[in-house]
Image (cartoon, rainbow, N blue to C red; front, side, top):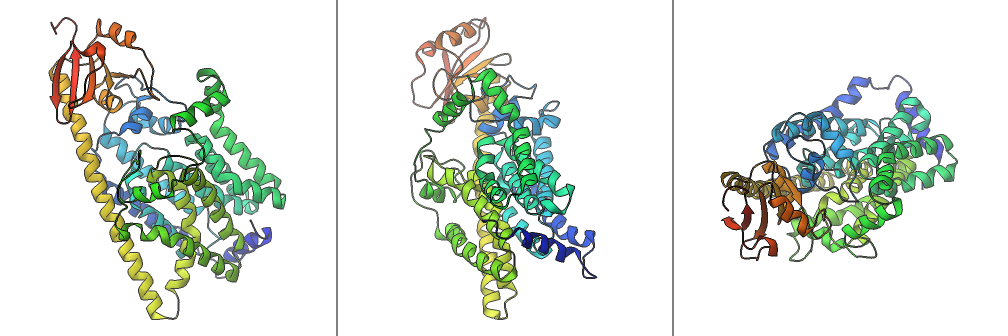
Length: 486
């Protein structure tokens, strides 16, 4: 898979040798420009004040003083919580948190692209960064407290540094850092993404990079593994519980589900309905032929290993989300997209420098149409998300007006994000987030305000049928405030 181990070293040597060697600043500024544009685009397209989503709430609540920590289910890792801690631990400002994450993700994109210096021309790396950063899903999740983008950037950096591992200690440190970042965010995803790196290292007997890769993954996953034994009944039990939360991992053909999500559905569970407009999915169908063309370009340019290895990592990173899980979310494939970006950019750069003007014009037109479609989906998805979270804010305002204020407890429909916004604890008696019982909620209602949220028109839980109720939009909440005569 890795090709000749010497061709990578030769590529690096060629980039470093002779009078044609570019100055460090001249090789860095195009990548810095791409990273800066990525950060700016996030701030323009995703309103910094957009409320926290469901999963964001779980991660942020672990380190925030704004509300009690939400239930932390087995598949989650605490990397995101620690990532946001420098802001969330002392400020409840969502705008400040999003600004921080936008800046940090821009810096991480620059770092992950720089990991490939010497393996490809800088124009290819800049194009790769632009391709990945301009996807609507990358822009949408850049400023959000979610793990998938960070797995993607860690995987991209780790693959580049693995290929450059014999060029010096900096590459080994980068390999360890990329591996640790992946495992810190999602340990199981990190293993999938790293499988081709292990295969290449074993095939070529590159023991030092293998040791560094293993150490990085272990350092990132050690907390998750330790927590499995302290809080989840052991590693095997945590993995089994994680599988159950995700609907039972096994053979599931989720390719069409992922295709449906490309139109802006942030979670496709259950995944039904019509496919998005072909203009929004054409780029997805272009990935396999472009990958094949990238291999052909690599063979002619003597870059077999730097092309085949990220393609292999992209395939293994995508495999569980295409074939082993029964639902879809576009963010699941961010690591695969990041790893595909470099070899595909190399192929597109070859087409853009072709001697045939019609080929160049066709590629430019295709890239322009692709960018326009991605931006349109990003805007539409953001607008829909903002409206949904504004509805949560209205529910919070009405709860506060009726006396449901901290310390308080919320349960039921979308209770986790609404509870955090309200400053309340959240609880569930069933489902993957179950953390209490019916009797526990009844006892809590004797000493603090408690509300049960249900979709409008749905019946409340049995224990809440005698409580006062109110409707806000599509939600009705049944509540009790001790001492208020309700």
